Image (cartoon, rainbow, N blue to C red; front, side, top):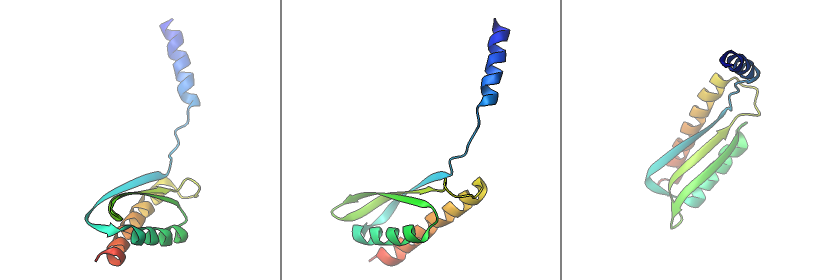
Length: 105
């Protein structure tokens, strides 16, 4: 009986395919709070220029952003996982730099 279970388990694992999602999230807590409308404006610029599907969740108080979660979805691109990882990290870093340049008082 144990052999039979082992054989069926082996067939079940062979039928499973591992697939990379090519979807990452970058969270950032800001040292100084930024104006919500400015952050949204920078995000909209990035979203129109990117080949990835981008989403942004803001944590805010009194129209000031204290932290954000940026999700980068590259599932619909033909890039391999390594290229996507490098590109998404660079994009997240560029987004933060632009927030600092355009939204810091």
